[in-house]
Image (cartoon, rainbow, N blue to C red; front, side, top):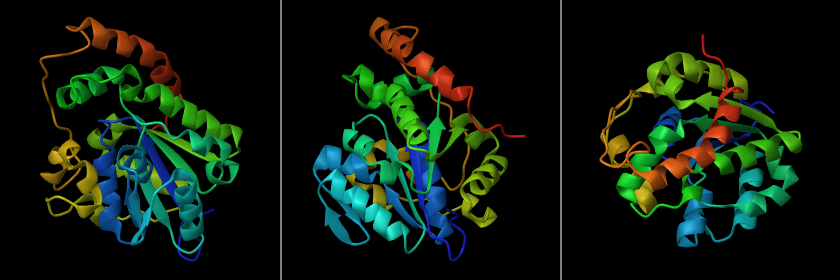
Length: 243
């Protein structure tokens, strides 16, 4: 179902953590032609509730119903990260085949040091690539629409990548959405400490970081990398090719 005028749709962006998905969300907020929700499933998993269109939602089944109902009336975009589990969605074939599901991908060698810098006691599953693969497969199995984006493409060639994304999900491309005023957004107040870099940005660009703990220097982090890299490679081979 297209998200163009007169044809509302549900637009999901699933992403491993630290994969630039909040920058993607910030761009979608700037469009103003979609209802943009920031990590509603993650908010419920971590805090027990989330706010959708002005009302509190406290469980994932109700959230799923709410997203589908809203998307029947207007385009709804949400982004969520796969460091938490939302297993109830696997039983919701109506949700998995609704609208368009996109998957934002980043190499776990880059995800892991960035995540560990904020949460030093991180667990292996929180890298999120294996669970991202599971959701992707579930969407395909349900007959849903799935597109994979490389977050390196997104920051290195933002206009071309966003044009391709918009074409894939039926949105008009909005070049004015590629820039915005910096500052925190109320949508990510429940997880603001994870998004300080995005709050300081005004556009989509690569930001280089160095970390004391990396997959090369820390055996535990290396084991996390080895677990997730096969899932990353599988998804990366199926990514949307950007000219």
